[in-house]
Image 1 (cartoon, rainbow, N blue to C red):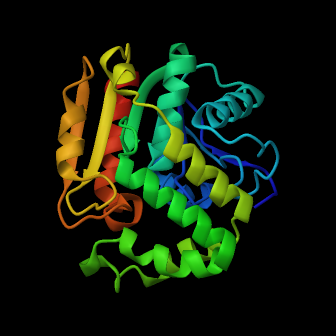
Image 2 (spheres, rainbow, N blue to C red; image 1 turned 120 degrees about the vertical axis):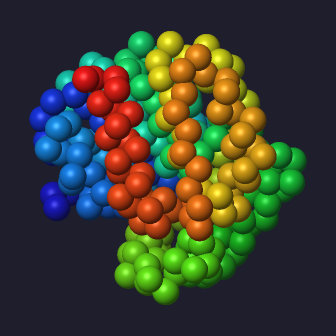
Length: 258
């Protein structure tokens, strides 16, 4: 892999994948391969993650969305379906608000248009403090495994270890900046209500990060939406339910692009 901030493979209509917090484009590397037979698949590194270590001052979902726009302009992408995992979904919502005319569709993949609760904001602050005092590795090592449903953890040990490696390689400023940006993001449910494009929701029934009641609040907001609820799945459906989630995205894209 060359030291670029994106993976770009396949031809045709564009599917653009945004990773989550303490992740990188590598979480999508195997997932997107079957889709490359029909689509141009692009996985980007968000600022402060992976190989994208530039432009990390003044973190916000809006500035991350601007960075996505910059990368898509470099790749000559005029229209796409944007798929955002977790924090990548928050960035996707900011992108949809600013650059909605570029979207043929949007997928919130274990993500949400809702803002942080007061309790969650407090936890973000505590995590920032912990990372600053104890370092990245001390935070990442216990952070990753609970993202996976408990019954999937032994089966997915290699993926969990890969996630830890990606997380440990994330600069401290990238982690603390992203935490503050997630804490400060606004409610973007209006973007779903006003969406001029179809929206795909993928939720894990055992995802502690996006509780089912909060997931259900959002499903009916867009004019056109498709929803998948996955049993025995936590926050990492691209690993926990690879076939089902890949097929969901494929079917969604085929509905849009024919």
